[in-house]
Length: 624
Ligand SMILES: Cc1ncc(C[n+]2csc(CCOP(=O)(O)OP(=O)(O)O)c2C)c(N)n1
Image 1 (cartoon, helix red, strand yellow):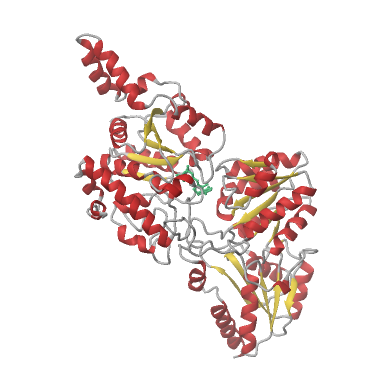
Image 2 (cartoon, rainbow, N blue to C red; image 1 turned 90 degrees about the vertical axis):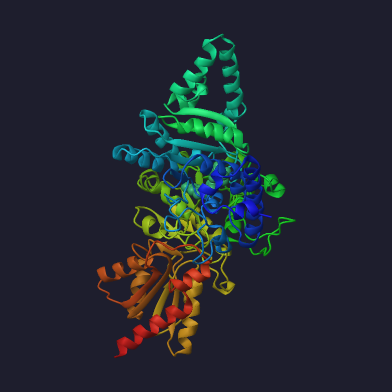
């Protein structure tokens, strides 16, 4: 069992395998992935779909000299397995373990880091341009899914590639799925191409026809092969890709080595930008994942027989609360519409999509477009609610500023996964939204601290006539319901009285602030705990009165300190002739790798014990 996989330590080992062993390797990898991910969780379905493709790539090309870039990077597990990291799967996505995405420091085979979608073709083209300038001749390959191809940057890159003769090889891994079913006109177009006569059949037909021409036939076939490298490229000139200057090869069956190796060898010999259209099945080889690829896209530890989660949670998450609240409000307010960038599942919008199909817009992995599309709808009297994860919304910085905030349009941003997200790591942590949104004109930022407050925050947002961001974390919080806030006003609110110091928390950090105050009271320190449901702009008068009551103020947020909530509080107070002592608790750096959220917070010093100790040390120093 798994003998072939165990014998593969680096891509050179694959090149020694015969066709039977190559097939066995694919089987071994699928067995390994299902077993291993059933224990650790991770991105299963996408990886099961690229097993033969990844093996064929390493069989034909010479990594790491030839460079492979994995778009999004969630499908790079097979690549990791083939490049000497099998043992590291035990700690996949765990603290100090192997990342779920390509990481340069992990392996020389990981040449470019990904996590957010649609970057691979740009990066590949840049690497290829550098190669040409240096006079090198290795190959650069970008592997991109049909979902990731819906991101505009992929087209910016193809447009750029089509202008010149820089050779890059783009592998379009088309499984007809994003996380959910892929959407849009491009997807329909790819479907048409998928069902056209496949690459090998066309090639055989042409060779057959030419060979029937006596004497010159055989020469013609090899001459065309030599000069053009691709017979098919002579025939199919009318794809979108060909029209913009990128040679289209395909479609090929992404689970058939013969087809894959033939087409990759062909592309390898070409001197131009090439796109190879590969048809794959997401979840291939594991029936439950084939049937339900969205569920197995990213999954927590599960039972192999049933596919059920090992530790299911019945708790309502912030995403659930958002979805339910939006459906409820949309019933009364017909101008509410919802916009998703390929994440209706993760953001809790499935029910809304089902209940209000005409008022639901999944625009694909296109966060920039999602925001400006919403801005357009807002100009026509609609109340768009754009639900996007914090880290992916970074994509749309200028659209939020230029198209929404400067025009003061009433677009609501439902920012899910704000703060640490844990296992997905540095590219996915939602650390920056407060910093970048709080510097934008007209923007109001709200931060509910418990799931029950999401509906209140939404209702409040709908009373405003400008942009509002409602940020909330992954999962749920455990804060006592006695602290429920009805969002009648969003000013600072004292949750617990205290005389010695003030601790101001936002969102899920309010729970932390309350815990810290309990620990401090055991040490004889009385802390006033204040929440800021309106993170920004804050209530100036109330802030001044807090500063009148306390000389020492602490703030706690789950975002980067630089430009964040605490910095703005202290900057405001200093500029208004208050000079409180205190400390801003948040993340000192924006690079926080993968691991479970609790461990990461402990490591960052954002946990009650560490905060309490820091406060006590400060207070003691002040006494001296
Ligand atoms: C900018 C951005 N938005 C959203 C996501 C979340 N996301 C991760 S994978 C994925 C679907 C990718 O589909 P595809 O490229 O076809 O790959 P597949 O999983 O089908 O192999 C999405 C939407 C992301 N990683 N980056």
